[in-house]
Image (cartoon, rainbow, N blue to C red; front, side, top):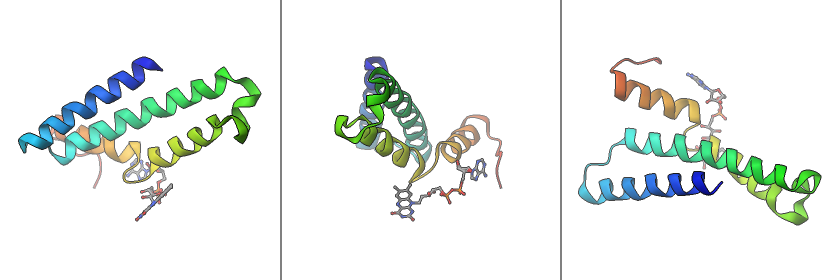
Length: 97
Ligand SMILES: Cc1cc2nc3c(=O)[nH]c(=O)nc-3n(C[C@H](O)[C@H](O)[C@H](O)COP(=O)(O)OP(=O)(O)OC[C@H]3O[C@@H](n4cnc5c(N)ncnc54)[C@H](O)[C@@H]3O)c2cc1C
């Protein structure tokens, strides 16, 4: 979980640097969003697992983070759409129309 958080934060810092330099693209954003939300979904799943059945109960808050992660994973571009955008950028081939 710490590795996921650190990797995601590092990617976001790099994206912010590109933004400041005026070289950030939509494809950079798509990569960051796809990567960070996938790692987030994985991490909150582990947090839920760590607490066993209690991880599902609202009083322990982890369930709230799981729900938040699912929302962020899907809105403003789902993982599938963001990976399609990145795939087109790195191969020059579009897998969608
Ligand atoms: C909490 C929350 C808040 C939101 N807020 C807003 C908002 O403020 N404004 C707004 O406009 N919208 C908002 N949305 C909607 C959000 O943008 C859509 O849910 C999201 O774009 C996915 O669209 P969909 O739900 O219609 O899923 P669908 O488009 O039906 O997709 C279903 C699944 O199929 C996949 N899929 C779809 N097309 C392809 C393809 N061509 N190739 C491969 N996979 C594909 C998707 O990735 C997804 O996993 C919000 C959603 C949530 C969950």
